[in-house]
Amino acid sequence: MRLRRLTPALAALALALALPGSAHAATGTFTAHFFAGGDDQTAELTDPADDTCHDLADDSGASGAISSAENATDATATLYDNDGCTGTTTVLAPGANAGDTGFRSVKFTTATT
Image (cartoon, rainbow, N blue to C red):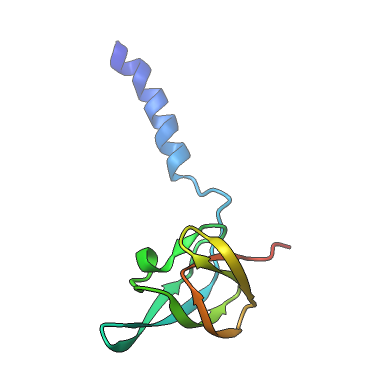
């Protein structure tokens, strides 16, 4: 009997988790360039989630500060000079490039219509 009461509740929870939310993602690729192990390295974020902080060392495999970036997404990328999307910012429009920024994290914002 107790299992029957839990079944509808668990089904509702599973359905809520399975339904898509209002989360959006940028379309395209954000490329970051950094220097590690004596070599120039490249890391990419493909179709990154909007309004989510992407710490480059965690999300893309980059280590240390990023020296330059290309924003080939349809979203505005806000670059931060600290992990956790804190600190000084640089805004990078869709399709734009940035050099010598020293940023460590990025957050994307896609315009809604």
